[in-house]
Length: 102
Image 1 (cartoon, one colour):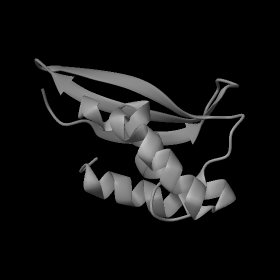
Image 2 (cartoon, helix red, strand yellow; image 1 turned 90 degrees about the horizontal axis):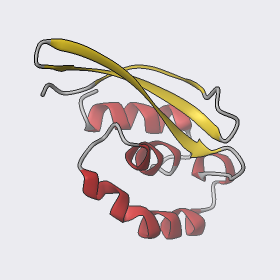
Image 3 (tube, one colour; image 1 turned 135 degrees about the vertical axis):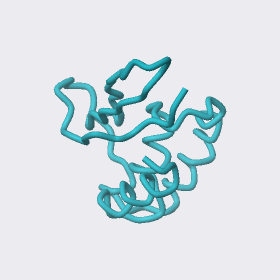
Image 4 (cartoon, rainbow, N blue to C red; image 1 turned 90 degrees about the vertical axis):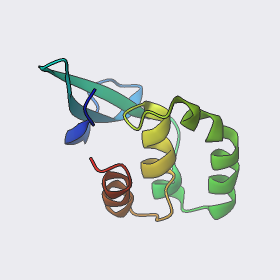
């Protein structure tokens, strides 16, 4: 299975989600495009509230989401983009793409 490639990031069409991340991945010669929705639209994330204490608590609670070892999963996206090191969504998104070579 080939590495995934991030195609786009858009506001989610689902009312309960914040973002839709669209990926493509080749598997057995076929290209598969899929979308992962991330972020609870009723809750704030670090890029919105900028509270370092809340960020640390979130990261501790959700470290288990990284057990999947799949950076296209919502847990990874939230962990590294919505709750990343910066309060800037754009900066966290760029760091996420670099980290996982997307």
